Amino acid sequence: MKNFTKAIISIIILIFSLSCGNKSSNYELALITDMGSIDDKSFNQGSWEGLKKYAEEKNITYKYYKPAAKDTDSKIDSILLAVAAGAKLVVTPGFLFEPAIYKAQDEYPEVNFVILDGTPQDGTYTDFRIEKNVYSVLYAEEEAGFLAGYGIVKEGYTNLGVMGGMAEPAVIRFCYGFVQGANYAAKELGMKSGDVKIDYTYIGVYDPTPEVQTTAASWFINGVQVIFAPAGAAANSVMAAAEQNNGLVIGVDVDQSGDSPTVITSAMKMIGESVYNAIDDFYNGNFPGGQSVVLDAKVNGIGLPMEASRFTKFTKSDYDSIYQKLVDGSVKVLKDTDAKDANQLPLDIVRVNLIQ
Image (tube, rainbow, N blue to C red):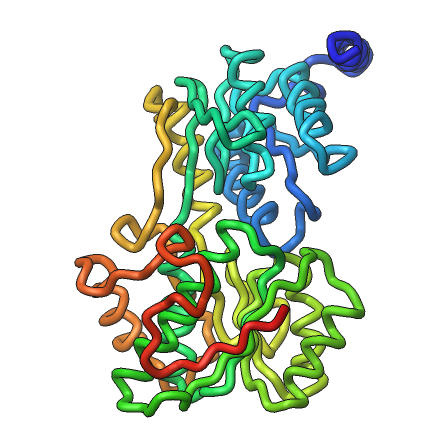
């Protein structure tokens, strides 16, 4: 059945090519979207912007494909569509592509793949394998979260919230880093135990919903000043609640300051830059296939958009100083693999309220 589906898709693409002409239907660069849309103000959008920028600068054809469903087979079907349409390099944003790339790297050895936030595995997390046509890009989310938590406490806020989308590795790392950054800043400021409070939960979705907005609004009404929202498009609901309740929001992945005046800063991964650089390496014969890398502060892989941030007390000089400590290793931030929950973090000042 699977081979039959592939054959049907290939025939459809072939017919389309013959009827429309190769120029209009062949696309060398392709992106397969993860959950959400191409304008999700998050991972899909950041990846697409990097690919689009390179393609338009170099006059290379490009296209994105949105899987019909969230399952692995739907992702593989979209990869097949991209390959059948002439893709030489396919970008897949998100760890949910791990099983699809695990299979695709063997099925399409002539095609190169960039997987962001994941490494190819068989779907059971028992067999991890990366072939020479796959480049795996990971990010030090814990460092990006740390910078956001540090900056917001230095700015003077002490009643904070963390609303993660789902308890998945990248989101957990963001949240752990945020708590540690807040704690580090509180220590520097000479605060006492419990002076900084953090409500901490995973909302279970990445889509904007009335329920998320209601929850965020209740937090603001009860005294939370700023909510850190590594939650994809669900952060839009947090922003809506902030706008109605004099609250502030910290975005993630990309600079979200344009989405709402309540966004004080964003814990960014340099997604667009890493996609752009990977494509450039490919076209220059230096594709780093067979590798999995973690982009951290040492390679400017994460950071806060200080020019777009709405800080009034936390300065660029303050930011540069703490960033350098991440670069030289004088500050080490724990990851989810180092601690199983926020209660295990070495907190001296921050009081974390875990909400199920």
